[in-house]
Length: 234
Image 1 (cartoon, rainbow, N blue to C red):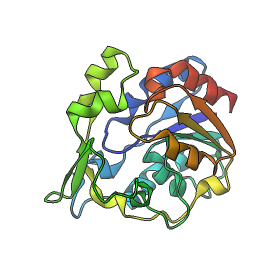
Image 2: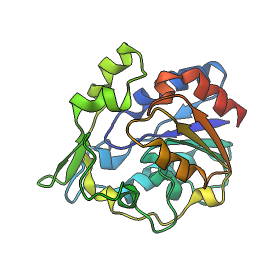
Image 3: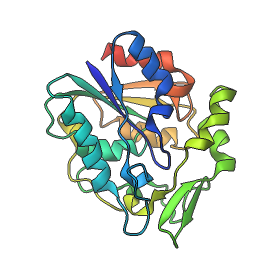
């Protein structure tokens, strides 16, 4: 078994965001990978107008999944990562389970922009720059919104791993919905201040199994042993 982690929006260095859970999995003999998402500027080209978007993110994740050959794989998708994974994991036989963490869970043809609160204004913790065609998390709101239950060490380091991301990913629809063919578990983060638990529970109804955890937006950083145990149970 191996695990492929797909990170959320407006961050880079996926291996850092997953490192606490990945290390615990490694101790149990389970390898993992964290693909770089080009729309977050992780492939050498900056995100933004004319830059990489959702199709490039999908291709990057598929490449990592296919590189594993026939090895049984669990894909862990976090937040925006659920949009990417819906298409990237479709039709790959080695993918045996999807774990969706505070994740968007789209039907075919849906895009990230359809999952707001009905307001045309961006979330208060986001900064959108129409000039560059990018958006990002406001650093001063990062900890209180997304990491309030994490250790001070993690809180202090996280801002160094933020990224400006191409805003075009919000409107690009997915062409597949892997969760319709692959067994799935949804991890609801009940103290999440970024993706409202109410919205998470709506998505969770599309999954095969639901687990609820008293955690913020990044339980793989705040409660890595719990996430490890959940993954091993799959």
